[in-house]
Length: 568
Image (cartoon, rainbow, N blue to C red; front, side, top):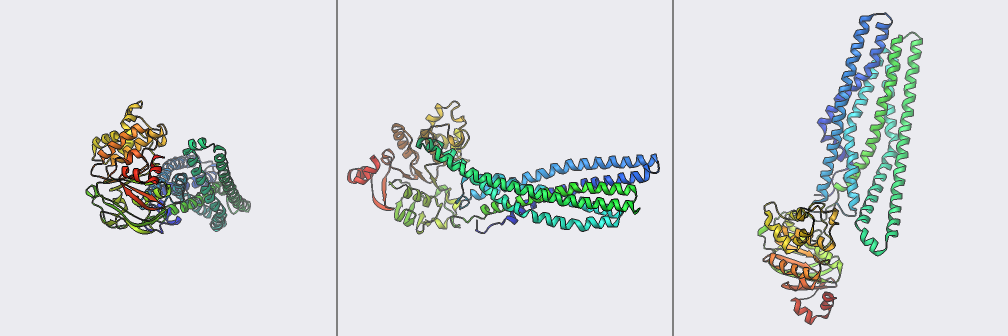
């Protein structure tokens, strides 16, 4: 995905364009509804002049029938238009959420950089809803403008001065309303930013609640959230004050305008220029105009907030990618799986040369968490090295398509979360659609997650809580490991997959892991002696570079530093 993506204006236009037919249909129905409503005072005025003043029963019945038809049509059009417009907003918001999800999950990454998960969630929910509302209110705005034009034409037929007053007065009022909405737009954007940040902080605190309690850091966490929440509240109050001021100012302008129309109409009636029925129609139209003006005020406010949210969505969609694209495609399941690092420098890594032969089971030991993390990032191609290259079967990863690469190389991070679904669904998420139950069963057995399933009330069909919190730490690790094994990728990189598992189970997993990954390239970034004991070779990283390599037992006997790292 290239950098320099859509702007806020483009996001708005695409949201509206995607619902063009619905918006047009709703606008036509809304215009019909507003037109019928505008004609009601005109027909009442005609009733006074042609039926009440003359005492004609036939004219009265005809005009009452016309009124009944008008009310039937406007009621039907209103209900249908409201249903279509609300559907347009929901569909537009839904498509925006799909676009945001696709961008966040894009293989080349970048959308989540410097953004908390809660902030992204807020953008995908609140901001998408506000932009979707723009597709809803467009038809309202068109209907309101149509009502103003119809009212102006009706007033022109009653009196040219009254009609001209409306036609000439509407554009300045609309321009003033737009100018008054500017502060609301700015403050609405700030409000959404602060609310998203507060949501992100809250989500992080909830996910780390057990750790915070264990550290006795609840008070510091509460203080942090209190400050963030207070900032969000202040921004929300400023936006609310701005909206109230905007609506009050526009309402005041509208009231003055309608009062002027009524005064001019009364003067013309007193002067004999228009009849009593015309005066009733003019006053009725003046009162009716309050509805379209209020509707335009609402539309203007929604557009201001929608523009602010559209800019926030555009920032995510236009996020620069983390890695460049590639044209080559690995051989998929038939890939050899030979990984090699050639002079890789990235973060804590310093000129790392590492050869991981196809079909080998290699352990990587480092006491520096940053080095382990940066190695995983390079192997997963979540970022490209500053210097050197990572190769797969002789091809630099930079030349490979990121999405195709991840179908060959799977990097399972230590802190992988489980989904809020059944245990089996979590494991099946890693298995291919054509793998059947065989891959899942093998993965469950190799990771000892089958023991976890037997302990649950409904076995593998037991629904897990969010992020698997209904399981213990060791149980979560086993299910996450099963998910990674079920994927059966040619290359699998595991980071500390058994740190919370008891030693007996860990030894059983180590033996089964070697069997289930036979003839597949596997890298274990760990300090677990049980896992390292089943590897073909162990590589030791120290100060960001390779310091030693050999078999686990050899390194234990000859390397005091390795012994301290593994047996500590």
